[in-house]
Length: 313
Ligand code: NAP
Ligand code: EMF
Image (cartoon, rainbow, N blue to C red):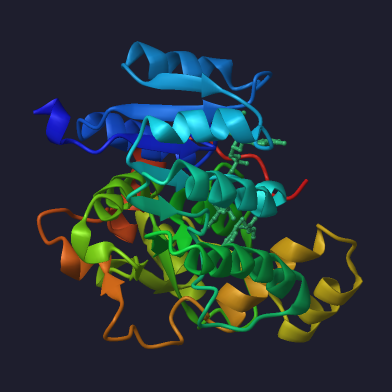
């Protein structure tokens, strides 16, 4: 069977979301490769992948020859590189052009749908870099899938509810009524591998917007109150204060507040229609299931995931 399975190479596979993609790829039976820096400090997770049968390729992101060689071994390429490395993905695009064999490339999107929204300047500058990578892929005629995974569920539950904190207060950004989409990281891994190898998803935008995962901050807090039996006082930060912070904080600290504004005040994960050309993952793959927000909170109650380190430090 293994010869029928696409070979998948993951950039950033040792990272926060990339590690879920690598585990999903291995679990679904794909020969799996991880491109990792020679002096990466993610040795523990890389060793785990190797023990599960993945091949770790050591190389820098600007080593063109190494990139072309690694790409020559595989069919599908997923990049889960972090914010500072977004433009380094142009090196991957250049190497894919030379290798000539890649059937699909998924750049490191995995958040808000950057081609449909407009946001505060610090977040916009971040999204513009991701858009630049998309345009380079299209220019080079590389078959792609763009994944709009929306909010990483455990990451944002940690950020919004601070579930490990004994404090009685929870911060609410804006009125707390805008709807947002929160998806569990493990599911993002599985669905990403699914779309990366699905012919229907070639040259499409795939949006992860399951009905069970759409929630406002106020609804999320009251669900958490119900589950924990606790009561929280809500400290509202007015929209204007968030906008002012996004104008005054230094780069890159101005990015998270701009993201909070876009997602939880403006509702950018929910405020556009999914187009006819787009794929919504929960509809397209009824054989799979997204962990609901209810279930995600149950995981926090019974088997709390490790908090991620901040994305912008
Ligand atoms: P991450 O864990 O910070 O980093 C991913 C990997 O990048 C690292 O494990 C590292 O792999 C590699 N890397 C390459 N060059 C590096 C360098 N110079 N310094 C440090 N690491 C380097 O990434 P992430 O937070 O998962 O982010 C991946 C994507 O998800 C991004 O597009 C980000 O915007 C997005 N994201 C979305 C959300 C959301 O809620 N939707 C939340 C967070 C992130 P090696 O050590 O093996 O080389
Ligand atoms: O740190 C983040 O948020 C803290 C409030 C950033 C990393 C998260 C992120 C989220 C996105 O959409 C929800 C990055 C890119 C995104 O498109």
